[in-house]
Image 1 (cartoon, rainbow, N blue to C red):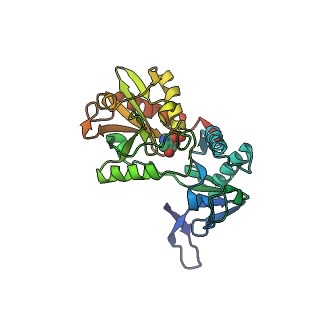
Image 2: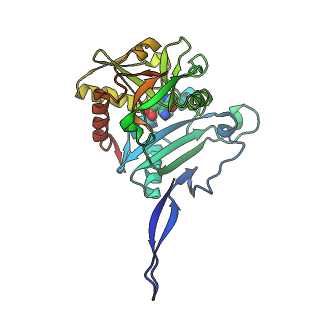
Image 3: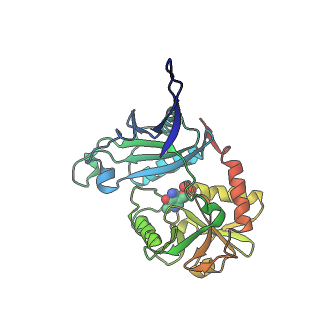
Amino acid sequence: MAILLPWRYWSKNNNSKLWLKMDTTLIYIDGDYYNKGDAKISVFDHGFLYGDGVFESIRCYNGNVFGLQEHIERLYESAILLHLEIPETREEMANLVCATIRKAGLNDAYVRLVVSRGIGDLGLDPRKCPRPTTVIIVQQADPMYGDLYDKGIRVVTSGIRRISSDAIDVRAKTLNYLNNILAKMQANMANCQEALMLNHLGYVCEGTGDNLFILKKGELVTPPAESGALQGITRQSIFELSRKIPIVCAERNLTLIDVYTCDEAFMTGTLAEIIPVVEIDGRTIGNGEPGLITRRLMAEFVEIRERHGIRL
Ligand code: PMP
């Protein structure tokens, strides 16, 4: 993301102001910092060759790294599920994230934290990768859905199922997103902003990069962990905010019929935050506008996002 920064150019006779295009993206790779053009990893890195690694997306709001502790915890849990030993301790990693944001000079940032298996050879064997690669990308943050927070998004059900725990433990946030990408392509082809993925049993699971909530008969419901949905950190905030409203918030398996007949729907994710859903598979949700409870939760989320986390 490139932003315009004023750069004052003073000279004896001239007092002109130049506008330079500066990219504020900063990347940490294994102990060193790079700008966007210079940040490179080896083609033998198994993260690149095989998607062997874990990652987190983190937001920093006005100098507050939202849910940093939770993101770090999930990263290490994901790594354990992959038998990937992260060289940094949790504390060192949290400090590295904060240090990279500070060094980038950004108050509102999007952070991508990646730990891959590291550099090996062309075989699959992870024993050939002596040290994991740690990458932290920090860039200026923008609301993912622009003006759609006021209007809501259209969603289509994808024929691509969420990977089940029989294949890869669904609690792990790994670099393997190919089925999510294929589902996202279906959304693109259907001229929708997001796709809904079902699990192997046909229950509604989640979006390609976000969790789903519906409001039905005055109760908020989201698919449980056993459905295969990632235990989103934004999703967790909804449980907390629902107690404040107060409104009942339950975890239950959802069928497509439950979803089609709900009063309100929204999706949650670090990038998306809380985005209202107004249409699913061509069916209008509620009155076709973001619902009252959804709007209330969005407003409450704006209230807490600068407090719940670690200050830089
Ligand atoms: N589900 C999937 C598949 C995701 O990749 C993500 C994160 N992008 C989420 C849900 C939402 O999780 P979080 O709120 O922690 O960002």
